[in-house]
Image (cartoon, rainbow, N blue to C red; front, side):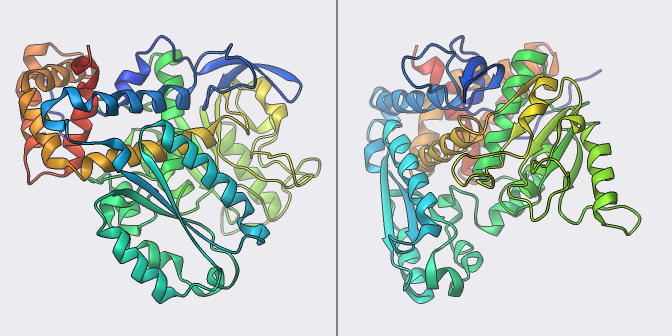
Length: 447
């Protein structure tokens, strides 16, 4: 069969990540008094000494710092100082408001991880009395501030502001080149279409990355030129349809050739019926088929099982399935987090994420990584000049990625690689192609 030209995104950091011997997501790990042997490791951080294989966060964040420090060795990039680029988080709510307590903790985690990557963390905090007009005025300033690489609103807002400010309209005013959390509806639409875009929503993107590692490392799946595993031939279930997790995740998976089931939600039914008995029947039929279960329902307004509050019981999980569970609910004792999947189901799974150290760290890592990419977007002319100065490296890298994915000879893909290089340096093309290309050639530049 003749070679079919590849025209989608190519490059990124995942090709480097998946090739690292230090990075193995399946670990043996004690958690809450139990030992697990098939954990998908989002963080790699374990209390005490590090005695388990490194995880997603522990690999990417130091690598971003290492690459930022290397800028001075690349003539076109030597004037970029990562510490001058800020990742801005906006928190709205009074300090004594319990509704924003979790947000404060999350912001602290993001700030610490951002600093470890070489970027600067910045937080703007407003009382619950802040008005819509005041927020619009501040947002206009942040959008035009070149020192801010990405900005995000920590939702929900607390107090009066949470009731009166239309956060959807507010987020739709975020500059797309700074929409690092994927909250602007235009970003969401571009994701759904598989169109060129600056960023993806952090949580679904992190979930896809964790699943990709498992598929590439453990199942021998082909790694696409964009750094994501091919989900071809797999039935994948998404539980949840929120605007920033379930829905964009469902659309992303379709783009990566998955046979998508769902998304399941509280109104799922069949034949016009959505009563609990019918819903549970549909839930079970689909979940028992799924090779991969992505849980992102969160707290459920009612129990679907008489004996457990979890959405997925053990009998709903297919033997040997992969579980990526992003849900976090404090619905039992108000302290410990619980996911969508009953822990009793883990014995049936080939691998799974835990409530702590799984999708959460992957989401934060993705956010910081997008802040790092935002810095490059702010310096896109320098990025393109760096690619021009290293054309042979870019083309050779693209040839390798294309030939590996297509199972073709290097001569078959050379013209395609040249075309993709020209797209990356073209000032009229979307900046994402240049940034993807630069990330792909960093390992070669740093040898």
